[in-house]
Amino acid sequence: MVENTNVIVVGGGYAGVMAANRLTRRDGVAVTLINPRPAFVERIRLHQLVGGSDDAVVDYQEILAGGVGLVVDTVTRIDATGRRVTLASGGTLDYDYLIYAVGSGSADPSVPGAAEHAYPIATLEEARRLRPVVDAAPAAAAVTVVGAGPTGLETASELAELGRKVTLVCGEVLGPYLHPRARRSVAGRLAKLGVTVVEGPGARVTGVTGDAVQLADGRELPSGVTIWTAGFGVPDLAARSGLSTDALGRLLTDETLTSVDDARVVAAGDSAAPSNLPVRMSCQSAVQLGPQAAETVLSRIAGEPAAAFDVGFFGQCISLGRRAGIIQYARRNDTATGVFFHGGRPIAMMKEAVCKSTVWQLRQEARRPGSRNLWFKDRQRQELRRAKVGEAPTVTSRPA
Image 1: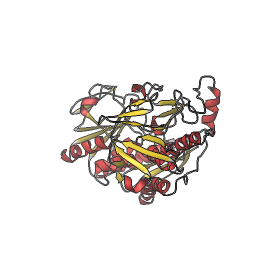
Image 2: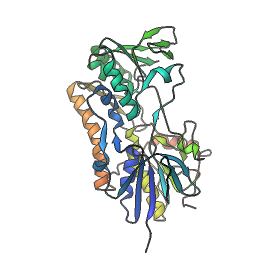
Image 3: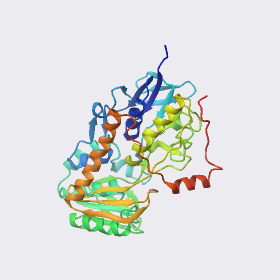
Image 4: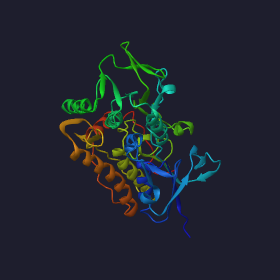
């Protein structure tokens, strides 16, 4: 009797769920998903949780294939030599292959006072901690959102639409990803919502106190609630486990998403750094990397060469409150173009459709493993990789 091949997926976010579901495509593969929470978190809706329009969670039963076993726990160490993981509860689990999909969270802020007085919003627990703080703040209390990427724009808009007095501190520029014309459109919408936008050379935050935000140019902004959306970090599990990482802590892999240290460890999502040229952290890349990481494992099980991954971007879809938004199109290498759509309810409905379609993709992969196979090749990234191939990490194509 042939024994099952045991595959552990560490992390139940967008990449992890897609990977776990794809693995069920092959008979004889036992898949275990380990995640610290009993429900899937829609990170693209966390600003809605803070505003009260969504709970940002989905039952795993709705999006996981029936053959995937769910373990609600946290992996504290990966023993690549012994092929086992240690759990926070004290137990261990053995594996034949492991997919590292631990995702990302809030970066530790280096600004004095930010860790003590500002509220991050990158995880479910952080958003849940922030919501009652916002609800309890007086209606006239100043709310300051630090960071003008998509999360900052969406959070500021969401709260301003609820009548909050919001200041958005951008640093150098509002919406740095956006095309200049799209940026002007977003600025117009924020103005209509009453959001005060602070940007320019002196708009870098240098300090946070319990009731103010201090800027590089000496200004001090009153702030009853300060929300921190500036930057993402990754868990240090790979580094703690002795695996090679990039400067941010992402697992270093080759172009098949395989760890440079161990051919039985494969990475996907925000915590992967293929060839030390990681793609942008986003659910958009995660739902592409997850299935491809699983395909690498399935190829290894079958004794076949694993394929190099492909990821491409279409742009960003950003909500600006419940009644407006903007869709910024991009080249496949993730650089914004001059093509964008902005407006009221029609764009807000499209943004909602995008959020729903992401969960639909997870559900579809659970029902029909292998159905998500449309990858958009980023040729510019491939050119960058070839240019540095002499220093790119390599790994054997077969497990030891």
